[in-house]
Every structure is written in structure tokens, then in C-alpha cells.
Amino acid sequence: ILNNDSLRPSCLEQHLTKDHSTLIEKPKEFFAAKLQNLKCMNLDTTGAFHQVSAKAVEASYELSLLITKAKKMHIIRETLVKPFLLKAADIVFGVESKKNLSEILLSDHSVKCHINELAKDLELQVVEAVLASPFFSIQCDDTTDVAQCCQLLVFVRLTNNGTVKEELLFSKELMTTSKASDFMKKTSDIFEKNRLLWGKLAGVCTDGAPAMPGSCSGFVTLGKEKNLAVTTTYCVIQRQSLAAKTLPDDLCDSLNLAIIVVNVKNSALNMRLFDALCMDLGVDQKTLLFHPEVRWLSKGNMPSRLFELKDEVEVFLKQQKKEQLYHAFTDQTFQLSLAYLVVIFKSLNNLSLKLQGNNAANIIAHHAAIKAFMEKSPALKTLNTSSDKEDVKNKIVFHLDCLSDEFIRYFPDNFSGKPIHKLVRNPFNTDVDSLPEVLQYSSAKDNLENTSLEEFWIKYFSIYSKVGEEALHIILPFSSMYLCEKSFSSLITLKIKQRNRLDVEKLHCALATIKPRISQLVKKMQHHPSH
Image (tube, rainbow, N blue to C red; front, top):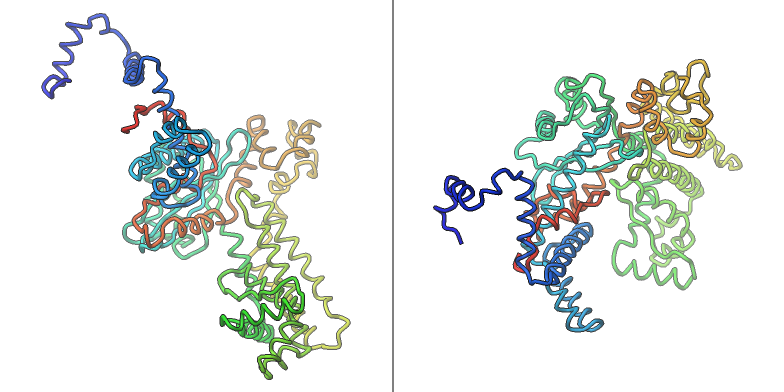
């Protein structure tokens, strides 16, 4: 054991020159390999103990990653996972296997260290992928967690191995205000730290909040100062939700009446009575869905379930002696309005689902989904034409006209007239004279038929960079904030009241689609149970 004086550089240099003169010219890599060998030699002469401990460290990393992805508390590893493994090994495999499993490091401190290392590795992999990608785009948003901390999340969309990947670039806490300048400072710091180029930024997607698109000092404006060619998009899901909020007063009255009817069963007793009634009548469904204003999909499902159980609801209202509500519910005008609400909400729900999902679609695909919905909406005007209720027909037509106007306002057709968009969307439906020669090959058409639009243009970017660059600037930008919104839900699950001091910068482990390089992390560690 060397004392502190012996560890001074001058003493170490003297020791090397005097006692190990043959090693003076050795490179740094030689000593790194020597260190790794010495770590292994801390164990028994057979090396068996080293192998078991290395596997135990690897298992500890894997279990830490699994439970983090499941968004469970760190302590569950020590209080549940390890006792579970030891008990199962003792019963199934015997004492020796139990002894080996007992070496797995699952203390709260060890797991925290492992998660930090996994998160750093995942973050490094994402940065390496961004650096290797010819272009990339980002989406960013902020939220306030249970500890009243403002969390900024930035996701990146890039090309990797011939496909499009979406990953969390970083998550940072904003210590004071949450202005556009704060977003830009955090983002710029990450770009500078990792040598990311603003010139390679193809697009920025935001939610359209005041801090984002502001004409003078918004995040988008500040981003354009870094790169004037960046494409800016606003979340298509939120625009669709805003455009759908066009119910006229009479249809709003019908929706409010439906909500009142559903809320009749809001007490525990009424809920049990309604369940018993549905069981007696032998219906498949026995639960009415409540109306959450902020959850559009659930909001849209409520009228559908109510219409499905309308006969049972009528019986229940009679039993509860809700005479006024019963007569309002059974009114033909209300029933026709409810039927229309079921149809239109279902159509809007289906559209919303098409706009959601990880790596779900690019701007072109989402634009096509919106356009298809707008072209289909006039057909809904033919609903109830056999009915003699002209007032119902008129308010349906009026609502569809308002809905169409709102969709046109929120989704202007910026694609149809631009040749580059036509070329990117389907190069083989474009005038052959305007096509680059390389895209006139028959093999190129076969590639488009057998791959996605993104993969096609990524492949031909290296062959014909000018057109490929234009294409990537169209298909790489995010068209929705789905990843941020989904991550906020994960954050709610991760950072609860009982662990409100959780470091959410380690969200990478819970959200990453790539795998951490655990084998490399294991090699860097000293494999010893006391670690």
C-alpha cells in the first residue's frame, strides 16, 4: 500500500525509471490493459469467481434497466426483486444457485449508480447518432411536475442505418422562468457541449404555446436565427383537437344532457344498481363512461357507450323516478342528436388515433389523413335524410360546415401546389422530365414499393444529395408532440409524491428505444461483491 507522499508524480516517475525502465516507452493503452488484468487477478487463481461476479454485475444492470422501464421505485429491487430471485433459486435450483444470485448488486445506492451510468450511455449513443445523421429535427415542450419543477424535454428525429429513429435528446430542469429564451439557452448549451450543428437542424415542432411561436422572441424565432432554413411545425394533434371544438349551442345542449344522464350513476349505490340492472337484462356492456373534458378520446367514447345502453338507461331513469330527465332523454330530437354525436365523435377519434404513435408518420402522411377526413365530412350531411326532423338535419349540416371551415383554418393546404412536395410524396407520379435521372431507374420504383417513404429517400440521399436533402427537410420534421405528451405521462408515473426528489434527467432509461451497451459498462467495473 502506497502512502500519499509516494503517489506524488515525481516519486512515481522516479519509481518507473529506476525499477521499471523497460516500460518507459510503453503507450497508455498498455497500462490500461494491465489495469484490467489486475482487476481480474484480484480473484481466485481459476478465474471462476471473476466470471460469476461479472455475470452478477451484468444482471444488476439488466434488472435496473427493466425496473426503470417499468417506472417502479428503486427500493423495489432490494425489497422484492432480490428476495424473489433468491427464494425461486433456492426452491428450484438449490443452495449453490442461490449463492450465485445473492451476488447481484441490488441495493438502492448500487442501482442508482447503475441507472446513472445507463442513462449516460444512452445519451451518448443518441448524440453519436445525431452527429452521424446528415440532418435531424427536434420537438420540445415543458411541463410542471409534482414538485412544482419545470421540466424541459427535447426529442430528436434522425436517420440511422437507413431508417428514421426518434429518441429523447435531453431532459433538463428549468430553475426559474420557462420563457423561450430559457428553452433556447438549455438547448444551445446541449448543442455546444456535444458539438451538434444548428445547420443540420431540419425542423422544430412545438405546441403553439405563446413561448414557442412568438413572432419576436419565441423559441421558433430564436431557432430561425440559428438556421434560417429550419422548417417549423405545430402539433397536428392539438390543432385537430382545437378544430374539432365547433359544436353549435343546440348540439352542446344535447351533449350536456348526455353528461347529466351519465352522471346519474356517479354515486357508488347508483353504480351498483345500474350494474345489476345490466346483468339482469343480459347486455354485454354494463358501464357508462364519464365525460372527461381534457381527454378527447374518452370524451368521444362517452356518447357511443350511452347510445349502446340507451334502453337500459331508460329503464334505470324510470326506476330512479327521474321523470323530467327520462322525458328529455327519450325525446326523438335528442336521440337523433345523440346518434349524430356518436358518428362524428367516432370519426374524430379515428382521425386522432391516426395522428398518434411513436414514429407514426411524417408530415406528408398526417396531411393525407387530415385531407381524407375533410373530403369525407360532406358525406355525413346525408345522415338522417329519412327523418322528418328538419331542425336536426339543419343543425347537422351547420355543424359540418363549421367543422370544415375550422379544419381549413387550422390546416391550410400548403402541399398541393408545390412541385417538391409532389416529388417527395410520390416521385413516380411526377412528370418524368422533372425527375432526376437516378430516380428513373426501374429498381428505384421497386424500392419505393417495398420500403417506407422515409427509407426510400434516406437510401437515395447519398446517390442524389440535392433532391435527397430537399426530401429529408420535408419528411424528417416532427408533425406532432406525441412523444413529449407521452413522456409527460411517464413523468407523472415516475415522479410521484413519495419520490418527488427524483432526478428526471435520467428519463432516458425509461423512454429509450435503443439498448444501452451494458457489456462495455461491465468491462469498466471492478467485479467484486463489495462494489
